[in-house]
Length: 396
Image (cartoon, rainbow, N blue to C red):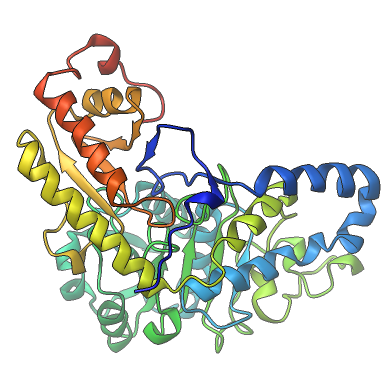
């Protein structure tokens, strides 16, 4: 297995063990200089000329191709821009048009709530008997019936880290005439993904987690290449127009993945993301996966051997986990705040989940053992039992 450790490429405060890359990745060292250059050499000096002279307009597709390499997508099938919620809406609205005789959007009860909210909103707009149907994750395959228009799932569960079988579920959806959408928010940069091999129609994802693009970094959308020139974007923004600067009053979709662009791309965030993607040059996702699982198995073994107060909430079988490990503890929020106060950074998801992300680009075995030692101290000595740690902040 190749060494994929890139710890020197990131800014991580001294003494901190960062186990929350599944929520927000750390800053790559090249980001401050690149953003400063964008501000000082491009925006301030070029002003409007920067769209052409600095190549700003081409960033969404150029960076999209870099992301595409990590998720098994062909060149020209991924584009960046907007937020993940917008990309979920784009994919869903386009997908339901492909199966107009059906009215059901199928998802699972463990899906990220925002995806379900977007689906609820779309169903409300469409009316005409459309419905969002949710079932337990283990029941998805058997619930893809002949009234299901679209199956929309997040590959890796945000709480437990449990993984769906992308190829098997996509095949089941297609065998039943349904369109498949995958949310890769906890997959991109975390596990090997083979969108082309899965044959799914759409995929979406964010870049501020494992891809380290920074808070609010732009999302991406993938459309299967054979569909891209026939997909009808519901959000027909001006930058998805075939000739946006002709300023036609009627919308004509662009050729290829460009039609899935909506509004003006966030160039400051694109500049940061472009640098973040450079860290991935030469990284093989299968090597990264092997290193991630080794860290996870070490963490689980050491926690279970020394911290019996915590109960594993993630799948025991490593093949069924993404790149995070979750433990249950009734006072999980307070315990996590105590850990964070001691520079072991994870996060909490209601009602009782303590989440820990494993990114072997900047984590190694000694970090894991050091983190477990702090967890043991917090739990053995009830250091979490402090009113300060029990007061919920707005972000958990």
